[in-house]
Amino acid sequence: MINFHILGAGGAVPTATHSPAAYWVVLDQQELMLDPGPGAMVRLLKSGLAPRGVDGIENILLSHLHPDHSLDLVALLFAAHSPICLSEKPLRIYGPRGLQDLLGKLKDIYGSWLTPRHRSLELVEWEDGQSLELSGGGLVSPFRVNHPQDRLSEYALGYRFQDSQGQVAVFSGDTGPCPALNEAARAAHLLVVECSVPDHFITKGHLNPMAVGELCADSQPRHVVLTHQYPAAAAMDLVAEVGKYFEGKISQARDGDSYQVG
Image (cartoon, rainbow, N blue to C red; front, side, top):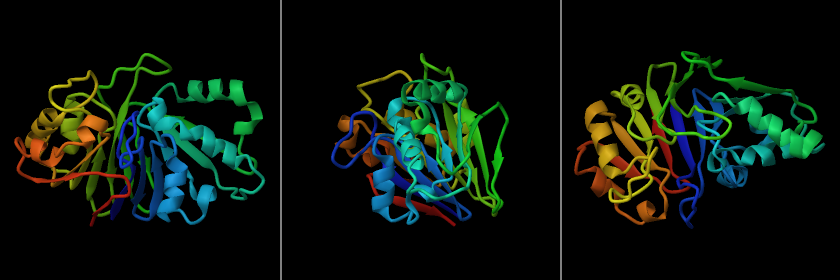
C-alpha cells in the first residue's frame, strides 16, 4: 500500500492553499519525508501524520537542492540537536550529487547546531541505477529528470515507489519534458506530477498543462495528481486543461490532500 500525502502543493511562490513543496509518503508502513521545503515540518505535525514529531522522521528524500524543496533540512537538523528530541535511530537523507556539499556549507554557517544530539546522520548521494529496499518490501528508485541546476549539483531526480504488491506511485520532482519520466510513469497507479505554469508561460525545466497532458497520454497512468503549482496555475482549472489531452483520472492538489494506492 502507498499513501501519498501532499503537505505542500505549491512552488517557490506560495499561496494560501499551495505552500512550497513537502510530501509525506507511507510505503508499506515505512514513512518517508519527501522534499521538505519551507514550513514542511510544521505542516507535517499539524496534519497528525507524525505523532512522534521530529523523532518520528527517519528517512528524507530530496529530488533536488533548490530551497523550496530542501530549506526545512536546516530546521529539522537544528530541532534534532535539541535535548528534547530523544530518538537514537539514524537520520538518513538521500539526494542527488551535491548533497554532501550542501550540508558541508550549511555546517560552515551553523556549526554543531546542525548535528543531531542523539542520532547519527547518514547522507546518501544516489548513484545511477541505485535503489533503496525498505524493510516492509517496498522499493524506492530515483531517476534523473530535466531540471537545470547551476549550484551545488547538476542533478535533479524524480522518484518511483513500488510497494510489496507491485503497485507503483511516481513523483516527477521538478522537470521539463523528460523521456525518463515518461518511462517511469508508464501504467503507474499514481503519478504525482508538477504542473507549474499555464501553457502561455513556458518555463525551462518545468511542465505546463499541455506538456503534462502529452506525458500522460503517452504513459497512461491510472490517476494523475497535479502539484507544484505557482500562483497563476493554482488559480486555474488545471484538471480541465490537462483533460484536453488525457482522458484518465486527474486531480488538482491542494495542501492537505492525500492519495492512496491499494
